[in-house]
Image 1 (cartoon, rainbow, N blue to C red):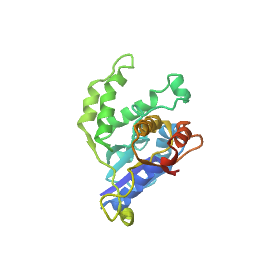
Image 2 (image 1 turned 90 degrees about the vertical axis):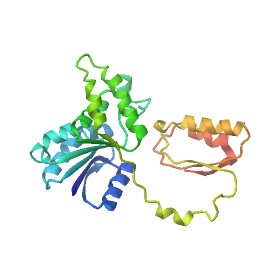
Image 3 (image 1 turned 120 degrees about the vertical axis):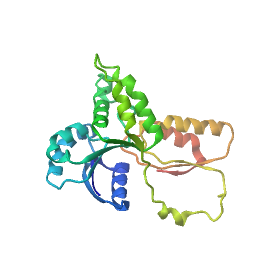
Image 4 (image 1 turned 180 degrees about the horizontal axis):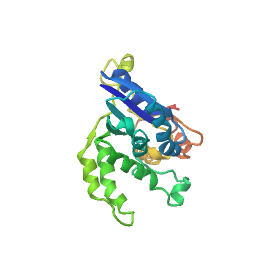
Length: 255
């Protein structure tokens, strides 16, 4: 089978997923991507740019698009070719349940429904909808009825079930062989338990909740170590500086 992955936001975990899928799949996989920046513009303009590139190639058996693509626009612009292809939509995250940045002007001006609607319409347009976890699938489908009630009429509540009927879970594949050399010789490593933060240093990962739990453990006198990893972009939430100071000698790695 010939598969074309259409990813307008190819960076980080999105890029890792696309490249790993292509390298490990038994199918012939082509990547159609744009750099992972300016996410709002990618959700608008990415479909136009990638549609032109798609039409310049051959027709695959399956289009595998991600949630950052306005799939309805992409399919409309490529209908002379894409009408002959099956199409699946893969959700790494969604703009309906994804936390908004407190400083985003779209949220403050109540313009925050549009990107969620792109996800909703894209899911309707796809032949199959795939999620990276059961939790994600249930959260998205569970939030849709309330989201649609925001609109004045014709809220299409029945469409939620149509999306649910074609939704499945496809977990991220992970090649962990590179970690074999770090495998401990015994099942129980020496020293206190090691607690790991391995996410981006951003608000949407809820660092306040994570560190608050650690403060509680420390207040109870429990022994533990902390390694804070992950990417940091520009100004990280202030809680990271606070946590480094409050956790003190428990921190074995920072950054």
